[in-house]
Length: 419
Image (cartoon, rainbow, N blue to C red; front, side):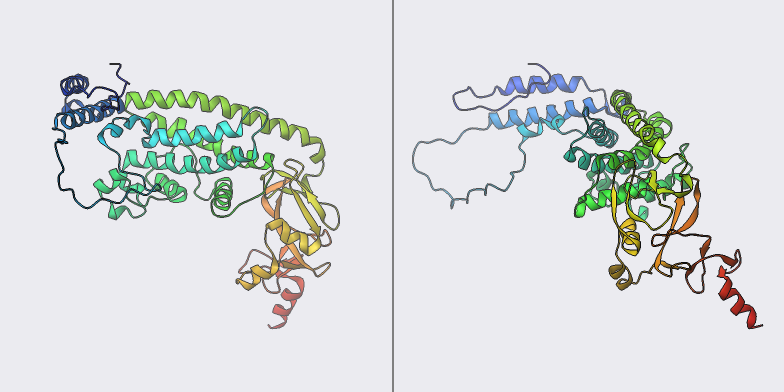
């Protein structure tokens, strides 16, 4: 019998299984596994032991005498048939096929990552469903692989509350694990990273928000937006794998499987990166010379929305072609993905008022010319302001900055008049 062939019990029209043959096969599988004190078991060794145990269970079953049909006998009350939607517990013969579902943590994370990249880099462009699962699987891959590195150092750190760690529950997967943000914080705290990972990374937060929308409700976006949004997280995760995770894998078989999976992922990631670079080059001429009024797209994250020199109207991202319809105050709320009624009702704040047109439509934004600082752009009239007064919440020129609060000229003069 080939080592991957599964033994089975008798079927209608077939002979009963031979217990001696089953036990012989179990002994042969046992002989492949070194003693327990020889070191950690490989995945294949654990699989052989599972198969051997199942073979012996099947042999025991075959040796039990069958019931004699020699006459009527009392029977217990009939047991109701199992409802069709109830899945029975697996028998020994089913457990033989344990390798049909074999995803230890590292390979599980890499499988999610492979699925995401394959969908994003699909030839001819990903379909809508490909993009959905790319987002879900990429963020899951991030969470799983970060926790794999934590577990290598200390399994208790994977738990939401490390002080409640229980080894048996951990092995059974019966516990609440930490999310990506806390995993990164703990990796940094224990100095386990060569990769610069920030728990508040904007790209990671944006991907998590997109994952949450898809998981709990739904979302509509463009193909290019999803591809561009996922690429920075994907590239950062690949660096983490190369520098921080794979070098720590000590199991030879696991390391070999991981490297084989990484070869495929690297190729597909390169295709995705080339596509995003190509798309960036395509729109470069449309953006050139407008850097001071080019703001980031809320969908794809690229600096590709050219703000007009005047009132904003029906903005569109040149990279992903995401549209932001409307004008003035209406467009300001559309751009941030909210609305004034809900925001203020729930305790949020309105936009700052513009000192030029007096509309509450001033949004703090970074620009392509200065991505690390904020500009204050009025969507209603197009004015660009220095900042927002902390006293009157009006955007304009600031007469006082850098102290306990920033003040516009009017509020500064009022304060001086009190002395």
